[in-house]
Image (cartoon, rainbow, N blue to C red; front, side, top):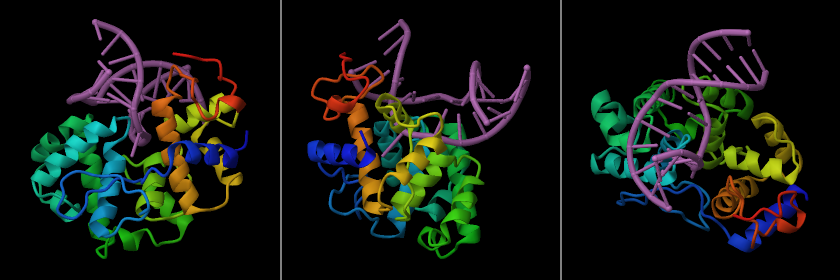
Length: 235
DNA sequence: TACCAGGTCCTCG
DNA sequence: CGAGGACATGGT
């Protein structure tokens, strides 16, 4: 089964997912927003970048708790974050796990942003794609998935995001799955170069992986069962 | 209780 | 390179 077919089946079954969730003006928790695929302002772009770091190998619900604490403390952007002391910031983001590492990652990202792109993340993310991605990857704590999530969801750049779910699905469907890059190249090579599709597809894969294509897959009612190698698996 | 979650870094061989 | 371990909280 080809990627575009899978995309259409998932979209048919689940509908638009409204990624990436961001906190509305005045709110204190991120919400999904189907129909509005772009961040509306600089604050939201930065929140997406923070979320991309905080959600590393972590359940999103725990990231939401961290955002709630950050927002309750009045921290909504890089400048605010840089105004905190390490110990205090660690406490705020503690529910998201790996809080000693993540405090460093967030602060490092914010420091780099403020020092090199005072006009903001939106400005930074307009640079030419290839070197821009390399620049993100050069930051400590920003790996391929985090960089690509920032590029796609905060920057609206055409980069397909691969995650653990995508690799698992690729494996089960018989797509290239050995490494991040192999799966990413395959997806990019078999889909229109569309930010809309990259955005929605990744979100739909996460939805499918949580609902059906778990580590122990439950293939009953899976919209992809018909063309999948693992189709006989049941909880 | 044990396993898992929208990874990344470091160290070895 | 690539495999293996460390990093950590909260939900089921």
